[in-house]
Length: 185
Picture (tube, rainbow, N blue to C red):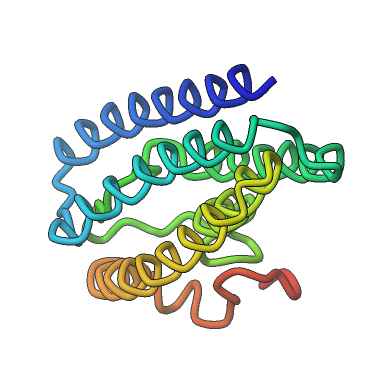
């Protein structure tokens, strides 16, 4: 079961990177500017190390499913639904990099109707759910902490870039970053 689940995650990440690369070419051809180049490599390294740590810790513990796996897997599937909805809502604007098209109107549909950063919420939840499913508690703790530091840096850079080149401030100042409270009209 572990190998199948791990393969699923790796395939999902490779598909996302393919989509991100295609969107990057499209956006840069339209004049998008890239921000956060210095921290991006650390973000990639953290995500790769997360997968290695998850595999190593899970396998070292016999790759046994948590007694809570049905609940955790159900939550994981729900989080993947949020991921798909987020990517679909952003369309060509979705990317793993911070690419901002000057004077573009920010996307305010789908989960962005309630949240400023649903994709980052997905990552936060995955950093817990994936390792917990196979009892890799150390990976969950270490990489959740690392991710919190990384997101603090990344969200600051991203929001400043969006505010400087788009209608982001007008559109999103009232919306919560991660926890939906109510739709904004």
